[in-house]
Length: 510
Ligand code: SF4
Image (tube, rainbow, N blue to C red; front, side):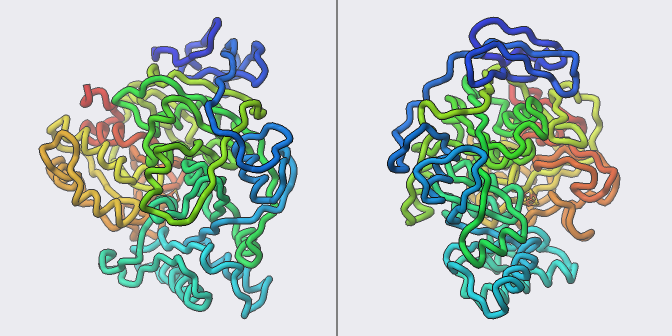
């Protein structure tokens, strides 16, 4: 059985079925009972530890009359209020609006219908348009969507349009980036203290920068396009405190699968998820993105990591826009605290067909797989591929199942061919992948994460079993409705590719 990651001071009783979970505590120091969703008879009882006192700079929102969380403060500033409460509806000034090829045409249609054929967008420099979903396909409707974006961006003189014209060679398109959420970060659109809204549920990715970021629908986006404002209900905040040294065989994907398994896919519905603790502070920006990317899988409105020196360093060469981070007040009200001792966690997967269907990777060692997919906004960043390469390098073996590699962006693709992998004597990821028998890294895009048109690279056109570094494993998500997707970290995905079964990466990393 996995060692308990519970860190609460005081006694704790764990049921075996729930032992994967971290501690749960209410924001008042009292005994609380938590009902494990899948095993309703089993209960976790935990005495909460005293609230951790964040060592944060004071508020930057002016005259704060009562304590607020980070998310509340960002929304207070964006709505020109000195204070607000969860549950209030406020008109928020938006700093960045993002849309892509799937939702952009619909958003543009609504904007034109409501504001007029000749209307101008509210700010040509605050709208970011990123073709990324259905790009490398001969599907005419998908191609037409990108044409609609291009026409609109030309008409409106949109400053940030990451266009692709030559589908035969993505490298011939210097403006083309790839998956929107990673591109937003790499191009400096993710800035602490700001509000970023996007027509994509994983817009929450940018919370890694201490930004309020959330997915919205086309109708709302059409309204933002015309006014720069949106009426938002202020979410209450759940606090996740992750402490302890991260074991060398874990990645942020394991942490977020742990959390979603703990609180379920409905556990954070319309709530903010704030991530704190020494483990979070030790994470790179890409790993923090992985953590925030999947808050929507728990129903979260947004996720946030307080900006720190790691954030500021990442942003140094990416933006010249001034930004002002905010931090939760010491006495801010969190509706619940969850605490984890990360040093005791083990590699995880989410079994089909829900991101909260959590299991230890080693418990699934008898699950035979047909393929491995490494890619997406969640698991297709440079560090994700570096992690996979580390496993292949350590094993010195060849993969036993087709292993598809889909870099999130053009920059990630360049890194795979240019950056040396630590401990490899100067080899790049691409060399290591080739030696391990993986498919050649393909053109950057969302690829088969969302299935896509039938000719999409690595789309699951048969009812196969796939270990994937993506974020969703619903029926049909990667193509075939009967496909089975095991969500996993890049370590676990690479280890599974080497054995042909779901595999704990410690088999190769220790
Ligand atoms: S990579 Fe997948 S989850 Fe991310 S934006 Fe694209 S389709 Fe959505």
